[in-house]
Image 1 (cartoon, rainbow over the protein chains, first blue to last red):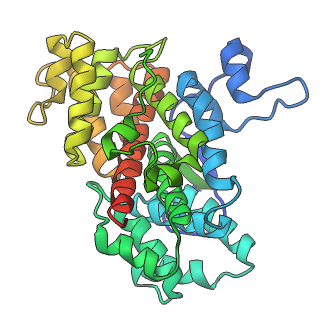
Image 2 (image 1 turned 135 degrees about the horizontal axis):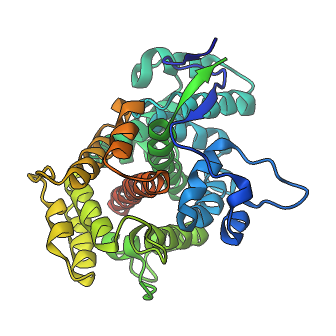
Length: 191
Length: 166
């Protein structure tokens, strides 16, 4: 018996696509290249197999995603995850929120911040630096975007430098992209 | 789209040698991949069932939904470059819902939903695209287009706010 997960959680659900993932046996050379499939690595998630239907964007999307979340310097990896979580809350992508909230918890070895954000959103009682980051991420993620000069100034006030702010803009915006794929092309399931 | 112009740099007004150019250069790889994805989403070599004109028109529509004039102008210019055939061009009209054209109606409905309120999307919304005749690979192409444009607009909005700091 499986059920759809509707509430924010840090237990990562299974993602079940609404469209048929690419059958690896039917993949073109270009698709195999984008999927990084080699004889020793044939394990590809359903999500990536779905995205392989549009191989031209997937080819650039994978290195872009890894760069935004993991490249060196700039904003800490944990704080980039808050950008991802802020977007995922606005767009209600339960799956993305679970993955990135749990990653934040792993990186910081704490569960308090995420627990507070899941209950109270931008009203969560968290340290000022995180609050400013979350607030900016949530407002940039609205449609149309609502982030303004005061929200940007608040990032500077809590100590973010421009390199860190750029990384926050990128990680937040990236999840405006990821959420619109993950949440619309499939659903989170608890088996 | 053979030209190497960086859409975000042009829209935000990132002048070579400026303070913001220095900050953005630290993530030059990301900005280059962003431009490459733009070209792949708007003018792919293999457009599948979504023509370049339809993609530009729908992206222009998304720029309107995001209330972003600079991106409206950008995607309008892209549409012009495709020759702007009427059936595609009218999809950029925010008051047009597709009329009697079942496929256009489904494309417009989905773009409006996912650009503006992705949280409301359900399995039924994908089924509606499939019932209107879209193959699964075109459902994914459409989804990447909406998702990517939503990303690109937000990067530019964020950078414009950051430029305002200096």
